[in-house]
Figure (cartoon, rainbow, N blue to C red):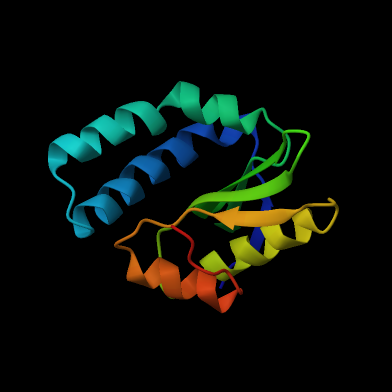
Length: 146
């Protein structure tokens, strides 16, 4: 079996990350009951080449887990400081192989990155109907708000 590693994604990863985001978001949103029209609209906004490249240029923004040279998962992280609060925000996490441990690797890696910051809190976005994702983040101590 090939080595599995997590690393900061780079702009050169944009094609494979875009393909994974389109593929995995479509599967997830369809499973969660969204119509093809809703999925298409979401992807037109958040799963485009420009969107991916813009976010890859931001420090601490996207991470990839790869097996050998093949990306098999991706996750985002945003660090915001508005002067009042300093927040670590975990965005979407996509893995091509459910139950492989890749999601945990990405979560652990992002939590490790946040250890270098003095944050007021960490927020994590989870779709309201995604019970598996809710259980996953609760395992890490996240609590549901809103």
